[in-house]
Image 1 (cartoon, protein in one colour):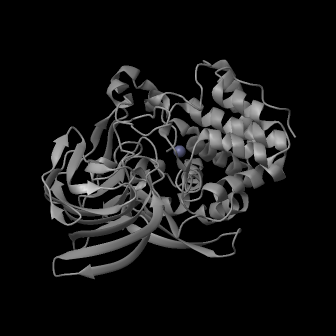
Image 2: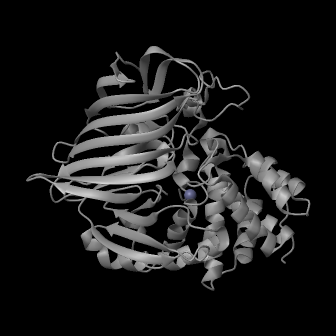
Image 3: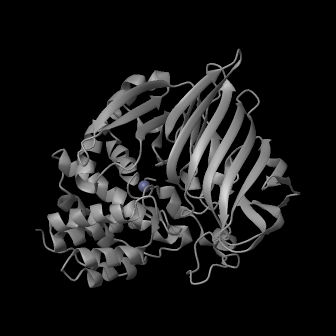
Length: 468
Ligand SMILES: [Zn+2]
């Protein structure tokens, strides 16, 4: 997600129920942020979602088939699902009576499930989906201004339960299949590759598959009518072609094509810096709605119509969301407290793009941002900003300055090799700040640990090293 000043206005008091740690029974874990979302009792291998959406009525009829593995002996399975009603549920094929507790869906197991044992869940559910109330405002499934009754999903960080039952942790990553039926004439866009479109007289079913793995908050679905374009980019790390696809409201086709037009060049530049593009495809979707900020939904980032003007005014955001595909999506957060690993990296990617196209260098931007940070309150540890501050501007800018300080200390060759190594080591997985500090230390003979400690764990702003 790109920074958002609205985030800074959230009052900490509203967050109190979400930072409780009583349900985090996982031994040895630090208290995590938003501990009422997700569980460590199981991990998910695959979601197979069959959805039928009626845009006229605004109703969703869903069947979720979930394959998961018990992480400890289970007598009941806990999922996150908001607003929508459950009509029927089965655990390992046996019908069970579910219970709801706020946004939790609880499924008793017909017999105890041993740790390490795979199991299946089938949940028939539905209703009128919509954004869920979170400390960051209403987030998740939403309708757009598309005259064909379009919908969108922008779920970061807590909105995934607005449209499917899930284990809503940023580090519970799985494979996804989405089969979505809409009235004929509507389009469906989702994560990964479009495998199939099948039509009846009145409906069309679109099937997408994304082997991911992907965190629930990055799963996305867009419906409505879109103009579309495809593009091809060269992955400079592997030499392979990456097939891209964009979608936008028909009336914004010209400016959107222009504003998104340098994504192939971005992908070429970033694969040179970060290593191979991690997924099978990439694209940008512009929805017919004003969004506070774009969101890096995996393989299909979403932008608002307000981010398109035909003059590339918001091109840094286009770069930002693409960088998240490596840092944030392929390498996920262990916990939301590690958010600087997403946002510091994506912000630094904006600066690298500026440098790449011959505008301000990353060093020039870093020094300007450092001066701004120095003039503001130094009251945040970006490695643990607090749940009410995960989208604070300082997480973004000081995070990016941290990477620049590391670059100046180690030199370009070691720095970019370190970034590539970080992605290679954790591709498809999750990682935390301590692992990054250790990785940077192994990648360089310079004393990077004291430098990173000062930038990440202390409130006082360290000096930027002298230019290389
Ligand atoms: Zn971001």
